[in-house]
Image 1: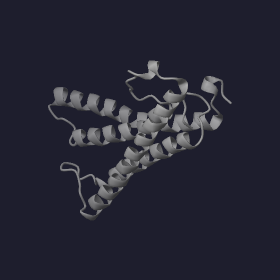
Image 2: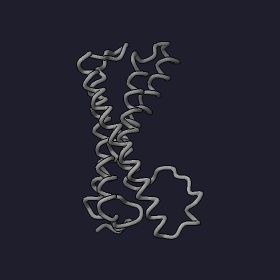
Image 3: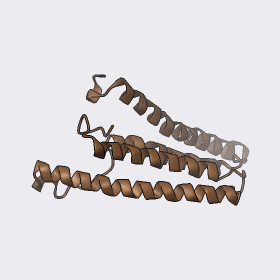
Length: 166
C-alpha cells in the first residue's frame, strides 16, 4: 500500500492513468489556444479549426476526469442536513445519492452510445476540419461507463477509506 490515503499501487496507477487521460486534452487546449492567439495577432492568421479541436479536447477532458473525480468523491456537494444526521442516516443518504448517480450515469452512457452509433451511420463531422463525431462520442460513453463501474463497485463493497470508491 502506498502511504497516501491508504491506497494500493493499483489504485495509484489507475489514478495516474485517469489523470493523464484528463490532463492531456487540457494541455492541448492550453497550447492550441496560445498558438492560435499568437498566430492571430502576429500573422493575422488563426489556426484553422482550432475551435473544433478545443471543443473536442474539452469534452474529452471533462469525461476523462469524471471517473477520477467520482472515485475520490470530489464532486461539489451541498451538505445542508449532513450535520443533523446520525452516521447511519448519513451513510444511507450517501448510498441513495450513489444509486441516483449510478442510474444517471448508466442512462448517459447508454444514450451516448446510441448517439455515437447514429453519428457514425450518418457520418456526422465537424464543419471546418471534418472530424468525425462518432468516435469522440463513443469515447465519452466509455468514460461515463467507467464512472458507472466505479460507483457500482463503491456501492457493492465498502470503500477502504472515506475518500476513495475503488
